[in-house]
Image 1 (cartoon, rainbow, N blue to C red):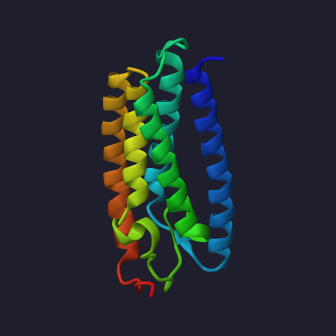
Image 2: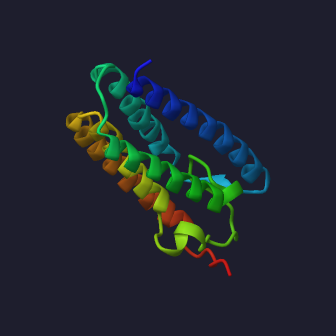
Length: 167
């Protein structure tokens, strides 16, 4: 099996595991009185991510050898992704689910950035195609992701207005 296919299968497995984790967290938060905000953007977000992964599988020849240092950057981004998930814990979802009165997280990567997960995702979408020489995929999906994230961040910021800061 090629390096490309091993990487793509690992990324797909990771994303599927995250969806399971996010759905569980969403169920628990909704049961606690949380609600979803900005649901209209979500199908576009899913489409960008699914088409990105599909385009990597369809348009990059399987025998393409990676630029190893860029693949290393992608691995570092995965560690940062896990840091975000661990920091948010039960509050991490793929949707914008807000629990009224819950304090904003200000630890982990959130000490440094308001939306670290979105920075990680933007890096992933650019770096993985570049690691296999597919700059066109990197550009197209980086632009699509930026458009969806601009919409999502506006929704999320409105949902977070007035929330207390964690101590």
